[in-house]
Image (cartoon, rainbow, N blue to C red; front, side, top):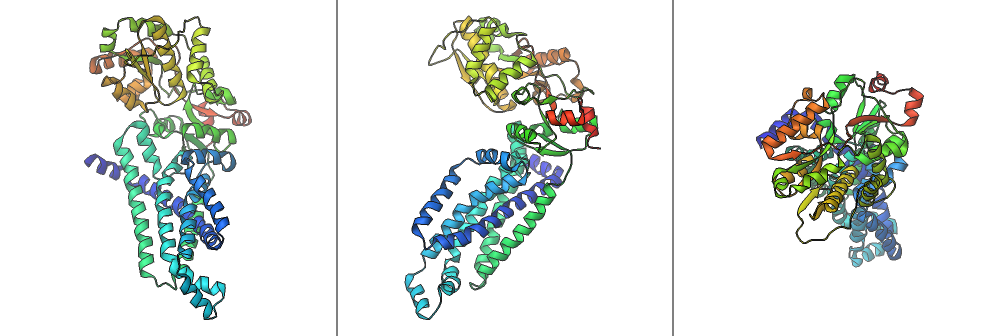
Length: 514
């Protein structure tokens, strides 16, 4: 808890900004949902057939995974708060409409008949009888929608809209519980605060004024939210990147200092940021030098002319105990030594990421193409070797290749555990003996695992020798020979930006923001 308290003190300003962004996103979407959902619910309350259709459609929207909906919206809306607010609006609509219909239909018919008998028009009955009596149920729907929106709004961080999800996803990528809690605790507190505020309004405002309060609150939220949209969309040189890059020792802070970058940083999901680059919603992204999107879209990888990015050569990391138990394993894995270069790896990644081919099929076709044997996978209830990977295409490909080589050139059986998560998850599984092998990057081993200062990362051979020696001494893990390519971080621009601005280096890109 002391570590969490220290984190809150050190990042209070940024957390405050994220909380405000989160609040604005939530209130903006909630205001739209109230404006649309309340009249729609009132209209549907007297139309059973139409209500079944509309509520069914809204229920289907609720079943769509949040990230999938955001990814669907980006081609139409671009990145930032707009797709986030549309998605939040869609998720908030169902509870508001449903509770409005339920509340109005739940009013005792005898009461409405008495009102009609007193000479009230249908509008008077709705305004003076049904709506005040139904308001507690309607308020319950608004409160439910608010809680849902606060939770779903954490995903806004993946489309560059900010919010408290920034620290949550950054923490997940780094396997840092403190960082995850730093985003999750304020989000929970925000949900509880908003719910308590709505509850207080419901309890303390006279029934005749409650509809006015709902409308006024929605108007205020919409105005404030609109102001937030203007703030979020202020013009600047935009650079998108995964949240992990912002928190790394060799991440954005050092890059900005080295190149004197003045950009508007947008934290985004890895795949979505390339969509944003293709649309022109950002001027550049920080990705990996072998990403399949580079080859598929003709993006330009800018030269790191000030040599900021450290070497990230790839090699299998194996438990020493596994090598002692199966000495033939090293020779099989070593067959992939120097068989891959940056270009070939990028092309293989593109086949998986954009060619809709399976990682297993692409891996096997590559191995056959360079002259290796491939045998059918041998099924065994207890595999001799467990090979793991992280959660992106390149790791899937490498794990498949290593597994195929082991089964083709040894009598050992292999189990693949693909997509285990970030670096810390794979490393801890390896260290504890839950897996035997996974492909790792020298720069990741140097910074993320060994915690070395960025100043160490200059010479590729020296970095490899250092991580190999330290992993062996500290953890009993062996780095085998590099596979021949490196997947370092890189600044990447679209062909349009590269051509119109005539930029080839990161230094030239940095000049655009000055």
